[in-house]
Structure formats: structure tokens, C-alpha cells
Length: 175
Image (cartoon, rainbow, N blue to C red; front, top):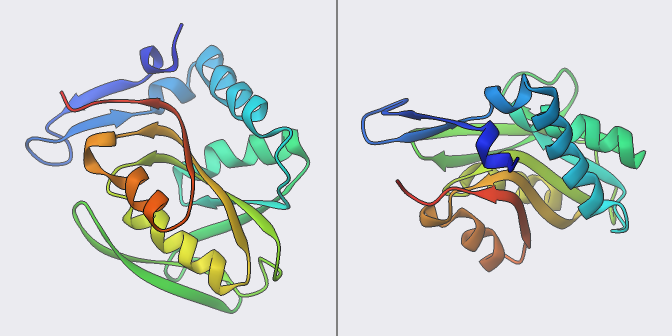
């Protein structure tokens, strides 16, 4: 089966006109979860990276098993106020408003090669803010990886234009 067959679409959530791509159906299915992680491992096993940065919260679910398989450290990028030590932050616009994400100031060493992971790329605001955080810490973003790309919303193009290559395991065109 393809990854898209494990992902449920919920119309008009969280607002009318939005086709929400729900990955919980993939996560609770052992075959779907294994397929997604195995594809990420296959794609990244020969690419030199030092750490994997993950965006709260669904990025954690993909990045942690990938970090385990690749024997890499994990960098948590969280919503404002969730990290206990000194942080730096970035504000960003998202599809439904604005938000702030943070990372510990000591999470990334200068020159480290970082793979950024999240579940979905839509407009790219969250991922672009995460890239800025990684770069502020002195890290080099090797690539941004996603389970799902929504190409019509332009997020992957936005990241590529900002000098950050992207990779997605599957895509959903507008429906």
C-alpha cells in the first residue's frame, strides 16, 4: 500500500474549506508507521547529518524513530514556554494565525549538519521559522523532510527559495 492510503482526509477541519490530512490513522497502523519510517531511513542513511531537529509535536513522532535508526541526536523545536533552559525564539505566520517556536541555545553546535523533520509542509511558515532558529544556533540545514507536502500551498517552494532543499514522502494536491 502507498503512504497516502494510510492518511485520512477530514473535510472542513479546522475551518470550512480546509481538507485536513490526518496522520493519526497512519500512526496507529503498524504497517503504515513502519513504511513511513523505513522510507525516511532509506532516504537519509547515506546523507551526512549530525542531528535531527523536530518540530512540535507531530514531527517528534517521525524524527525520534529516525534518529534512533540513524544513531543521531534529537533537537526539539517547541512552542514558546515549553523548554526549561535558555532558548532563542522565532515568530511566524501560519495558515490560521501567528505563533512562536523556540530551541535551547545549546541544542546545536556551530557547523553541525541538521536534518529538519515535521509531519506536513503547507505554507512553510513553521518550517521556515525552524530553519532560522537552526541557523541562529550556527547549524547548517541539510534538508527539510516531511511526511506530507501540500504543493498548492507553496511551502516547499518557499523553503527551496530560502536555500533549504525539501523532501516529502507523499503529496496531496488540492481536492
